[in-house]
Image (cartoon, rainbow, N blue to C red; front, side):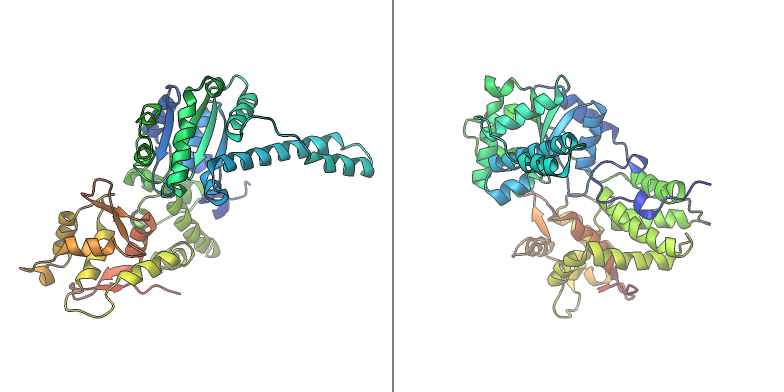
Length: 416
């Protein structure tokens, strides 16, 4: 009899590679990225944190049998330049390869020879080419005749650093230089903001960078059907749960709502819930979902909860309009929203306290978008808002509810 899978084998929020058994195929995005890789332009992949950007590009690059290296732009921020991040990437790859070669070569030797070989491992001379070109050269040798891709991941770490964005623009402009173009390496720039190309264009006075980049559609949250399928597949097919009545429907709707259908957070929440169920012989009930809410809040949303609490009304007012506004932006289903949409939600959810009243929602949203720790931010065009971090919406949905009078917002009481 085959051994049942554990929750951690099914729900894998931190996995570096796609979990094939739980991968959600996103045909339009995969097709868009595959098509872009065949074009003569470099590519921007954007989407909220946890939306599946990394799984998407790794899946597609694996499907087309491409070799790729990932340069983490968080290192560019740490080390002071993108070039330094490329140097670090090369150092790590070359050190690993030399170590592997030395250990294999010394496998049958005596201890003294082994020590000598390993000591020699870290000693090598750098070529005369600068790190960016050396990365391209290294990747082309690795790929041979296969497609080769250099991924600039976590680009959002650089968007507020004009010097680094300017450096990025300079590096991208080199793609037409014959010395660099000869390596035939494609660049994929991955980050959170929806307007990554605008950040780069702002330092591109000649407006030449835009002609070298193409942007695939946003890697957004899953559709309700995709999220429902993912949750049900994990519990019913992979973990072999059997649910009675409409419990599976209630479970999938609850998880999809509070995680905002973002893949990483679905995995995080379901892992907490599945661990609870594992302790009970793989049985779950409504109380277990409340317990999972609290565990997930503690593990994934703890800092976010403090942020939301900081924006709540500090004193009890007659209507608690700011709290109603926070509740409404959490209840809003749209990725971006304006004051008319939020006012409509407030009036619908709190009809008695809003009847024949001016709500000043525009001012309230502006207040939530200002200060050192805002909840929302204006979109680049300034006509709408979006959350600073998708976790804020999740935290609001997890922790806030309408009180029994129907007039005010209160915190949910969750089990410890």
